Image (cartoon, rainbow, N blue to C red):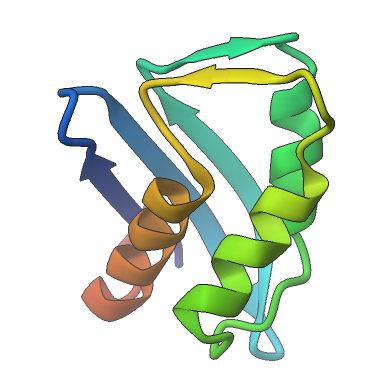
Length: 99
């Protein structure tokens, strides 16, 4: 069972996430959206920051976890750590879905 969530930022860009949960931790995390990220390989770093995160982590702690993983000099246009944390929270609140 997967969890899927998305958030459309005030600027109109979409950030989404899909994951499973194992023992209360986020697993098999995929981050996607129509945002711009440079360098592109930072997406792997952001995804890795979510992998293994406790599902009951408070929003501020989740946002900080994502923000701390982003290297200095990264350009992330159309999304943010807060927007991605919102997508994760929406996924968890929506509950698991098939596929």
